[in-house]
Amino acid sequence: MKQEAPLIRAQLKTPRAAAVAGILFSVLLIAGLLLFQLSVRADPLETGALLRTSSNKIALALNLVPFAGISFLWFIGVLRDRLGELEDRFFATVFLGSGLLFLALLFASAAVAGGIIIAYADRREGLLDSATFTFARAVFHEIMNLYAVKMAAVFMISTSTIAVRTGFTPRWIACLGFACALLLLLSGRYIDWIFMVFPLWVLLISIYILIDNLRRPSQTVVASPGQTSS
Image 1 (cartoon, rainbow, N blue to C red):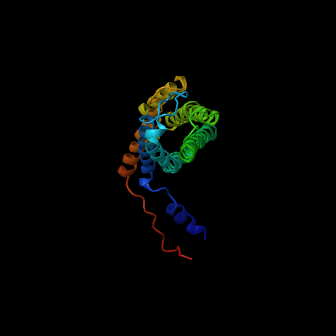
Image 2: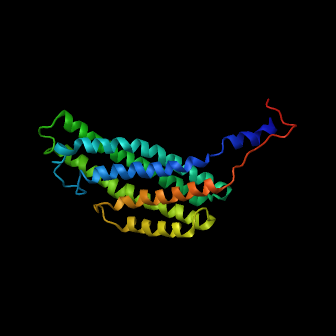
Image 3: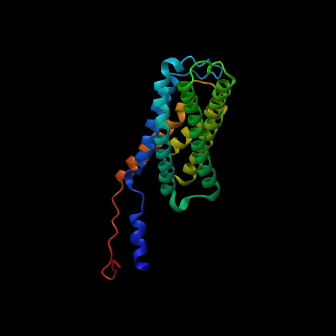
């Protein structure tokens, strides 16, 4: 059984094409953000009149979020696999924690927005003028434009720091990550399109990792004659 351990680990090794997860996350999130930004203004005091004309676009954007979240989890796994034994406990904790918090906040904001759409479809009369709509709208904007954006910035900082220390990506990508993270940290709550910086940066890293993985020769583990399959 001990001789089979290397074979099992090799079979569980992250496939090279797993970096596609980051690309898929970026594409889905960018598509969702485009649909949402073109339908809803970043103003938390927006009256909600666009729900009457753009609710279908908003619903489509929200339906992309769960799939983007699943892809983001795979992307985190790809980065951790690439680090391997070089992973530092401190930065790994910040990296993983900020990524999971970002994902939780993204889901929470999408759930609030989805709740608004469901409530509007059920009771159109009087909803847009109610205190409930005002509260839900403000909560959505606060979660998405403040907390989720800042967690994305922390994720970029921790990932870029690990990249500089370990060299698992080129230094220029890490420096770009620091600059984009600073932009997100210092940005205001309601700046249109600012959140696009994060998925675009993830897309850049994913493309680099995918190309680098495909360039590496495949490593095939062959059992020695003394190894058995049972």
